[in-house]
Image (tube, rainbow, N blue to C red):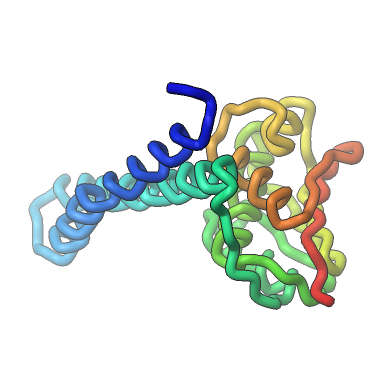
Length: 195
């Protein structure tokens, strides 16, 4: 396929078309979860439900990157508080894996996508460093994840494509006019301030 906008459009189309069968799997898994089943079936249904949710998130990430690459990403920018956004991102992760602190400020981003990006970067920093937890410190429009190790730094800066969520997060932040870089053992995510 020629190196033009056809490939990102094809990826976007695939993401869209995969949603219907995925929604069916997820819907029936949720239905089965509310049904009385004999062991070990409830555990299997829980695994299917979680995996279908993870697939939906991966499709969101892939679709986002395809739109950015094709120059078709038009975010709906909303003013939100950076500390609240960081707390929401951490809330979606396993309890105790991200400690959030600091002082927020008004930023102008697409909230859902940016929340997902922060979550993915914190998850990747922890996972690729082999850590139990990381800290997410908010200072106005700048969020800092630490520690970042030599193993996790190339993943969370988008230099190495080893995790779709982290790569998509980097693309999103940059497309919003923000930046991501590593300073020592800290990942700095600078988001666009309001005004």
